[in-house]
Amino acid sequence: MSEPRLISGYLAILAAQLPAPIVEELADGLIETHRFYVRQGLSPDLAAKSAVAEFGKPEAIVAGFIRVNPARRAARRLLGLGPLVGACWAVALLTGGRGVWSVPLAARILVLMALAAVVGLLAAAALGSRYRRAARSGTAGFLGVIALDAVLITGVVFAGAPLTWVLAGAMAASAARISLAVRALRPAPAG
Amino acid sequence: MRAEELKGHLDAMLLAALEDGPQHGYAVIEALRQSTGGRLDLPTGTIYPALRRLEQAGLITGSWSVVGGRRRREYRLTAAGSRALSGRRADWRDFSAMVTAALEGRPCPSPA
Image (cartoon, rainbow over all chains, first blue to last red; front, side):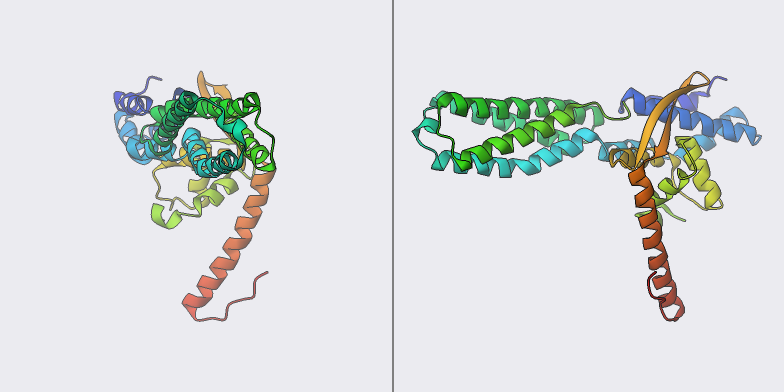
């Protein structure tokens, strides 16, 4: 049975803003709702009107999915962890010996610029009002977190900095953040 | 019942709708409609993000199947979901007993 234009138009609005698996699930529900009203004796067009009215405004559905976007949640978690991991590294660098500071100034500036870019991407994912854009920003941000923390850990190792408890703590915090970012990169369960 | 009044209770109602076995989104909505005697006044499209939230919380799990040429996502309660549902039921009984007692001027029964 082909679905009325109202149904396909409604689904097209959702498809423009949400990933295909989510839209497939919504389409299944909407088509079932339409069939329910047809079985009740309504004409296909009237049944489509009733089904769409019952489903609610597309904006409300999209907003609901944006709130549960896994990229958004993971980005918020990583942003929340940022100050803690940053503080660990700040203490490690301030209390570390010359080895830590032997990293060239240009490299340190580069890391700081990369950090700013990653924070920007995570913020866009955490606060974004578009599902797909938030997911893309999140993916880029998660990859950035992994790269940054890996650079920090390997940089300190190659700089030959003496391993203190504080430095070990900072490295452990970065490793934990890498693990969180890797988990955030896994596809969402519904995908 | 309006959507605003449902806030905080929808998750438990969705878990309860899945207690008897796996259901797809539309069947969950139907189960809710039946169990509430058709008094549930909620845009049914908003049930789907709620199901996704419960899935992310590990309270339900979803899997795809193909029915009538269409992909369909079916949800089932996890062990954690069953435990959460039991807890929510107990909380609701205590809460409703307390509010009923307060509204009707009766002594509040002690919690179970």
